[in-house]
Length: 129
Image 1 (cartoon, rainbow, N blue to C red):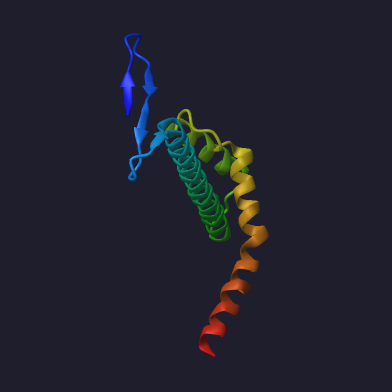
Image 2: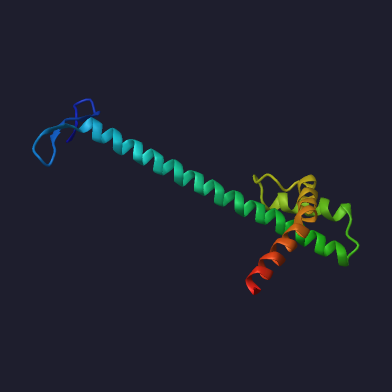
């Protein structure tokens, strides 16, 4: 049983298990606390993984969009710099949209897109067999 003392602190009292034997609730409480902490940390880790996955996909897509536009247009350095200014104005307080980072997103896509095409192609070949 958990009781609140006059000073406002919770204290764990002795309880009884199913057999009626005396059990220290502080032991069972500590087990519960450890289990809850582990569950919270696991959830935090999974949330971080999901955020990182989404950011990588965002950077990939932005890089792809820029490469696609540059292939059909006469886009140069000034367009990326303007894009950076507009994104920073729209998403104030969010870092990562500097001109340098946008160029890096483009380079990221250019560096790895052929590997992805090859990976997808190999997967499709395996599925067709």
